[in-house]
Length: 108
Image (cartoon, rainbow, N blue to C red):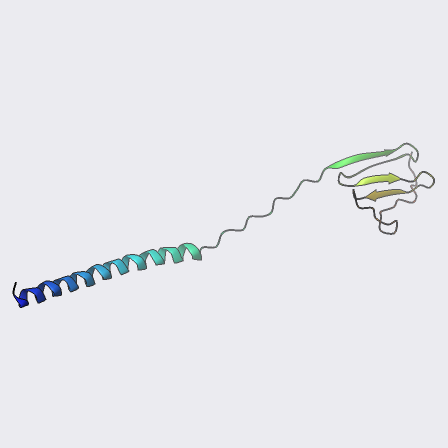
């Protein structure tokens, strides 16, 4: 083979490599734009689903009292005084922070 033909084949190979590299770079750039667009979309925030509150009914035969209260509370009734305490289960609140009903007027 002549030296001119070797140079020509090498030059064709370099041009072919350059063209293939440019086409590959365009493909990568297009993919990057798609990825950037997908990443720029912010998801719509979902509103938190509220937990339903269930209620229980309390009747005090001793004091003639009837009311509803949230099911997550325990009711403690005093045996000597007309006091009713609402206590969180496994957490006993002090009397100063408990909800008290000291007197009920007009109950039948």
